[in-house]
Length: 485
Image (cartoon, rainbow, N blue to C red):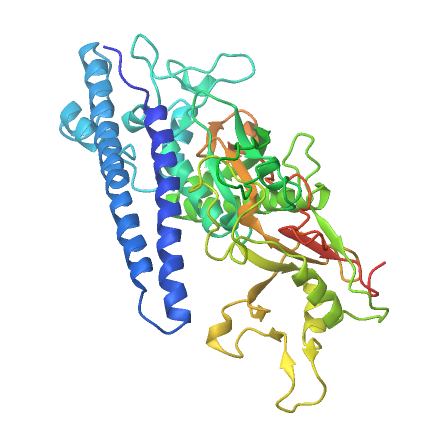
């Protein structure tokens, strides 16, 4: 019997989770706004909150259906293998117990336990039946192992190949990568379906807000009675993201494999950190060749000059950046707007100041006025000075986040003011992982390979000219004041 692909169900689960995350972020924004203003929800906010709550119900229901199908398909595939007389190992109570243990996570209690099972199978030991529950099957009901360069990897001779590490646990690593990333978590992410390797979006081609240029050419006119309507139309362009491959290779010794919790702790500590670092570095400095196109290398980046000649970072530098910063929390429309308005709704906390750590000492000098009197206004509030200023501190109402991806102090890019909801990340969903015993065989080490397919670029093509015809605006701003080379 032909069944629905488990991978397709998992991919759909990732897509639904992304939609749920957008709704939750919108709900949190409503509550945070009311809390910050020390008031109850307005009627409009309460109505929107109720509407969002209703929108969550079908998404939650779909998640429950997906979980049910994953369980049932796994059990069905195991039954088909049993009917063909394929042994399921020496689990307690035989095949029935093995089927009962094959749940959505393959029956493994942890990622480390699963990796140990993969290692034993690849070394020619007993094949844990739970490995089969995690993978897809061919037309004959045989488990498809991860293929190597010679195409010889297979289940029949596990010592000659490796097994797919289940996407359920790879997804755990993937979610941890996003949740711990101060940059990644602020970007707009769109998962790509299992049958595609690229993402195409149609966006409004708007470079100016002058009359006749808004939304690429849409114009409303005041007319007299019986006058003929005058036609106008918008202009669109296409944003295309093609997946690039980010890989990680890890070795685990026999001693580490003997202790599954230690192995899992090591993987979960090191792999997400490196994947996050490399992806976030590309978001800022990526060349666009075989990797995402970084903010610093896009024409959407706006470079301003505070007009100062002082050697240190000045108030004028910061205020000029602020004056030319465009983000949807302060404007009624956005320049790069896709057809699905919910997709790019500004997420709570997406805008921030991203700085090199060498800039921190200079932030304490930013104040309007002199001395310490009541007329002095401090622009920067360091972390710990007041709970209202959050974990990172506050500069003009937005968090200040040190990163390793900015330039050193004194170089344009040491401070980046950015609304990262205007940076689009497309990926293939969960991290793909495979294992082999051959790469480090003489060292008694198992090799685990992880692959993450991703691309990213700014949604904006270039800075925007406001209706007034004044200075251009952008959601990505750096400064070249007197302190910069």
